Image 1 (cartoon, rainbow, N blue to C red):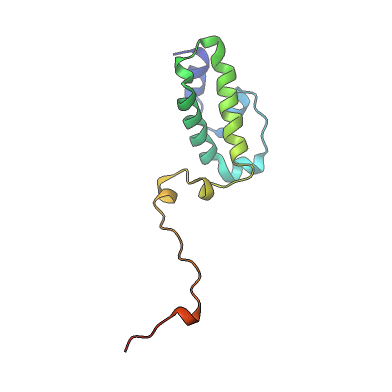
Image 2 (cartoon, rainbow, N blue to C red; image 1 turned 60 degrees about the vertical axis):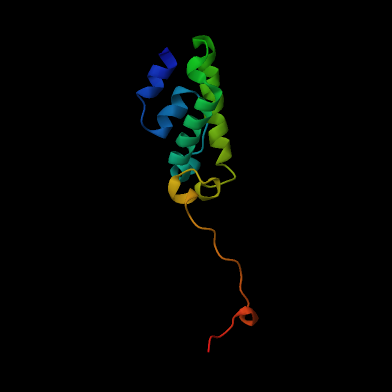
Length: 106
């Protein structure tokens, strides 16, 4: 495993990932969406196949994956993005039903 991937593997707090990869962030955004951002970061890294890249390219790829994950949640939320199973399994809300559409059973 490469140096940067080893370093990232030892991190736990979202702020540590942003510091290690030198990606700017707003604390308020992280306070609300940290788990969603880190999950999306992991998905982005898998999709980009960062582990298969040359070690010299991995830092920039990781940086790009984290910046992309962060930007996704600047204008969206975890519920809208459906990052976790609990949101994916949630049944769609019923639409508006007017009083005229209701029928009584007799």
